[in-house]
Image (cartoon, rainbow, N blue to C red; front, side, top):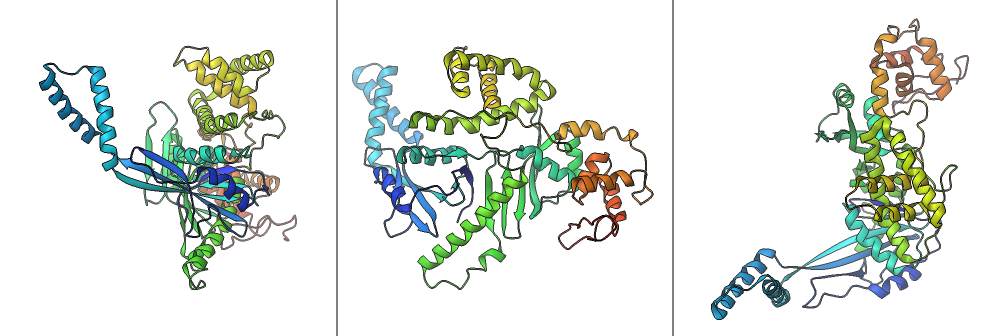
Length: 488
């Protein structure tokens, strides 16, 4: 039902009924394009009943329908060229640049009624209970078309982009480095790893086993994971990318079998599939957010609260700019590395001074300062990055969660780590026990990170703790942490 998810946030228990939403969308309902229109978009009924909003168990489905006339540029140019030749023969000289432009416009108007029409549909799922708005679109630009028309129809809709505490790139790279997916997820056989330098060199895995040693070599060479295929709870496979978009969503057999044979007609089957899929997708989104460190809220300590937009135009601009500004910040952090803080701090102070002087918000102040600079100036991007840092400062990495590029430097100092075989007499055994008990997690990844040792040695240390510190490995690969004394 949904193949690609561009995810946005609404307040939980958003007070919007299907009837009220349908009434708001009616002002921009779809109508076929006229013979002189090249493109037309509007809201259309998701089902055959004519209602603009289809609701099942408080879950809403809406459809943006588009119609575009297919008029190839080569055809326009050919006809224009033939008409220009006729004009030249009739008047004795070739038409000028202005005359050619007008001629091309006339030819386009003449050919438009005979053009073929291509229809498109973009589906949007709204979950007012859990606060999700999801657009089924492969690209942010396609999702922006839906959001723009939705903001136009629904006045002051409290819509925000989804933000998480940790960078998806850093977390996905950590999963591959430790060869350990978060609870409830498994790593599949598709991934893209890209260098952080100017070369942007990348390695793509397609239906290929991600060998831990091979992946770690790429990480050591400066590459990070920007796209990773995963499976959630053995029910849904998907691909997570660096922008938090969820693509190639596919329900697995264990999920599709739950509704097979339980519906009597198409309408019941559709409603059953919609209710089941949205229920599982809501759980999937919550688990992904948790795996990425939780949701980053504007009201958190140290995060400046955004001023309320005064008009709908400001809301539209904020939605449109958010994704691009966060991408720009990630790019600067990747390129500047340790110089990032020194580079951006003076710009942050300048933006704050402008905010105080003009009584503006961070984004508005940065945009105003950027407009005063020459076009194409690198400082324009730095101003936008500074605004994002003011609105939502970069979280300092917790112990053990340092960026991959910093971990590589430490890991290379293997000569400082005492040798050992991973048994109970290993010089690092007591430290490994302390790591497990401190983190309250019987996992290879934290032992490997804290002690700066290899994967195999960390795994043997955990095996040596079995019976006294941790329990035996369960069918899902996890171990239970035992209480002091060896009893659970």
